[in-house]
Image 1 (cartoon, rainbow, N blue to C red):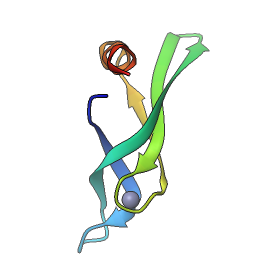
Image 2: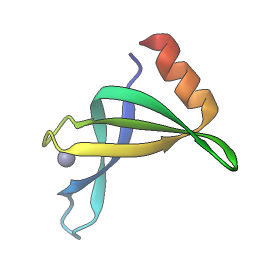
Image 3: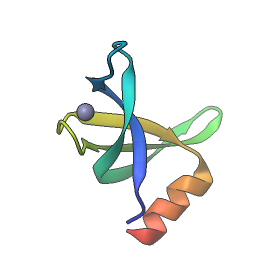
Length: 68
Ligand SMILES: [Zn+2]
């Protein structure tokens, strides 16, 4: 599967800002809304194991599902 990175709210840098970390165990989700389908990914931070969440574009969601 392609590497997906997202902001981890637990892994913070020296300025206490969330940092970009690789997401493991990625699951792509689709949700219908009144503005169309929203795509998101849920996974676990490769550094701390904490839960991560990220909104995806349709293209990226398709790419992740095709490479799974
Ligand atoms: Zn983390």
